[in-house]
Length: 261
Image: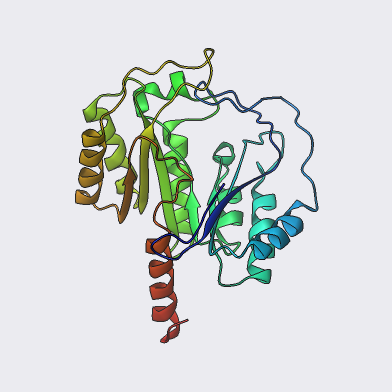
């Protein structure tokens, strides 16, 4: 999916790598699953970079299915894609929305040091609902560990996460989740409405009002998130904070070099 420049003049796109078949079976997601998906295309990183460079976008979100069948969870493939993209278009901003790599912190480091600008991983829901909503191989503490390690592994790394609402969570549980994310210095948060993809998936417990989404945006900003996108149609790969990220990265580069880009 793509967005044009809009009011801020930043053209963005989201692309999925590592195939279309997931090794997990989360109860909120309709992506097809298999224990043994087809192996990744070794030419995908280079071909993806060439395609994105030709699109003329300023900000790219790279995401994927979970690949528990690959020793590093696909981290190396992500990293190769980022490096190929930065080689062709150094000024492009790259966000990777990743799995938890089974909690493999070395895999997190591989990706963090590939040249990406934003490390995104979704905690998805509150602690109490994790086992109901997510595959048993995922988990609340594991997701926090991955996000924390991404932040700690490279100075200035921007981190991002997302929460789905409408699954039966309480306000206090949402607040606690947001506070747990802030405790590990997650910078950007998106909150959106869960929608049931098929009758076989989890049912919607509540349709959250626009006013409540506004409340969560204000609350998130009040506890220190540097950017919060909150609304019924907001998704983790939603056009959320690209202008903020560009400004933040350029300020970081200016401070490091003593001059602007």
